[in-house]
Length: 389
Image 1 (tube, rainbow, N blue to C red):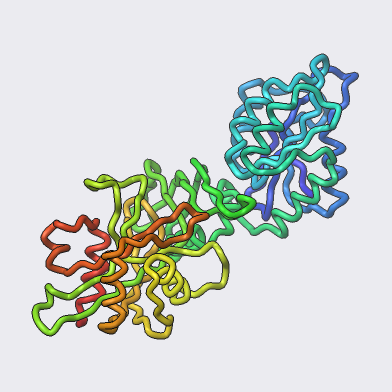
Image 2 (cartoon, rainbow, N blue to C red; image 1 turned 180 degrees about the vertical axis):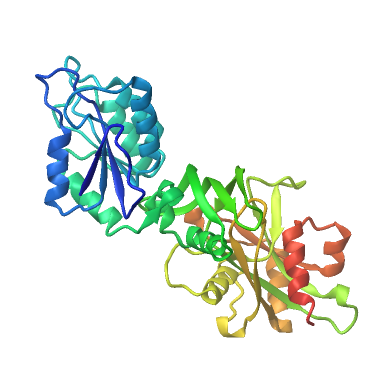
């Protein structure tokens, strides 16, 4: 375990890091709680970096500004923030800790605990439980155990990579974006999570995030630092179509209609190809494609019947994720089933995800006329899949 005290130089690389947030005693007769937390971490075998916002010798020798800047930098650099709040209104009121708690609550990095006898903690307890569905720890060893279970062995990060917390770093969608840039010689020199979005029964799966990045562009010899990336898992998208014997423009395509909050269409609904992603590991894009087609349209097609078109970014100026496009020509019976479902206006989707989808069938002619509102990315995928027929 490597302890970094207030204003000390931070390591240029590490596998995992935590920050000990909470009230700091300002009187020599009041002991700090942090040595006890360090003992608990050592007891469970934690071997990463620990940022401790106290002077190593117990005396304050540096300026307030230096202290605050160091704390902000190290908080951004921490994989987890361990907040232990032994609030005592006379000796450790923890007023600044309240602000830190609030700023970190939605980050996904906050572990919160406090002694049972701590006072004025009801509001913090309520916010933590409402946000994450967990009650605060009342035991330092239990907090240390959770640190170990959430960080494991960590992963080596150097330079600007240290600003990417482990919960983001370990996602497949971040790694695929970063691997692309490293392959062409670009470098990540700074980053900051703007917001994360967690899903799952325990909110323990980071579905998407927004990350401000400072990238050194090797081919141009300059930085790009006025943008952020939006990242989420790749999607599998299915072009299910039926050719006609006549004009290509009469080719029929299966779409799904779904209310989407960002929509600017006339009715508030988006028309797009069936598709989506899975938060479950080890599912192939073909398996996801088959599942999504059935979930959203009730059409059952085996993954082995799909033809892989290719994979591309959907909105490369904003988002990192790819759409893995597959195509399948439906039989007349299958397309008739889709037409019937569209006429019945029957709802499908995953109710617990607030997903409600409706099958629609349209021709290429109608899509090009503008009578069916589809976005440019959907049109692009349709023509990419149909160009070979």
